Image (cartoon, rainbow, N blue to C red; front, side, top):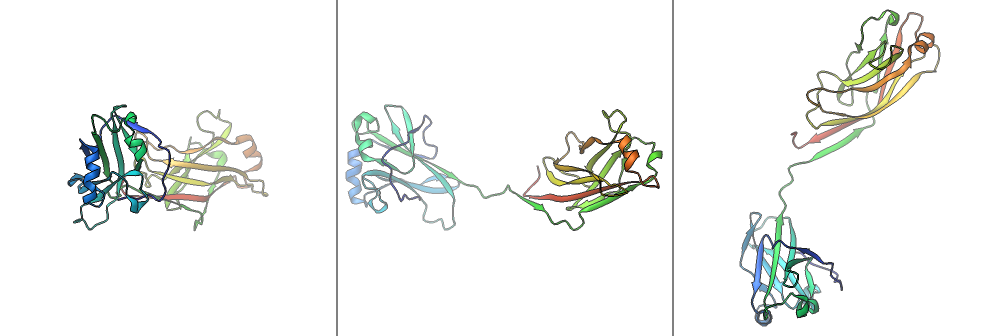
Length: 297
């Protein structure tokens, strides 16, 4: 497995102390290994070893694989058992032991022979000993995924809410009817005398997912749009943009997002109630996301 179409003249040294995790080939006489491969197509093949549920062989060309532009290099490969007919994806990491550093050099596939054979570099030691190795990391089938999409062409992007007899409202909070946008159900909560921290001088709005539409843990949905208080006499609407990710419950509770100080009550009474004391509110969504998951934790 693996090939190289270009050779490099320098080595980026990437060391590690831990030995190869899948297979190690220790040679006690490198020169005789070279000699022996003249009778086996210039390569040495290890016995089969198991990794990731499959059998493999480590293949070493001690003088390089000339058929793969490896002349002048030590070439290493891994071959899957010929009995395997299915496609297998694996990450390969090749190693050679360095006695001088007492560590393993990780390299892609080729190691220059001049570097390897120079005794002062530490790859050949104790009269011809050397060690090669490989990690074979088999990729498991993909089982965890998500597909994120954004709906920018909503079939019913607007929701209107006529709040009648606004001046007579007594409750702290009022909730609109639920409305569907982007495959989700939403509600708008209105605080006619302001939510906490607004000093009773502001109109507050918060947008929530409806009670029957819940997100699972770590699930989220993006929404972008506007909330408006409409001008009953013209086009001087009060409009603020909502551009947020709505996430799943935290400790069992959902949080809405909106404005404590959407519009001052003084300005509202002056300009935004019609002759019947009705406040007209509009929600318009521009984008709503949807995500498909392989599984939900």
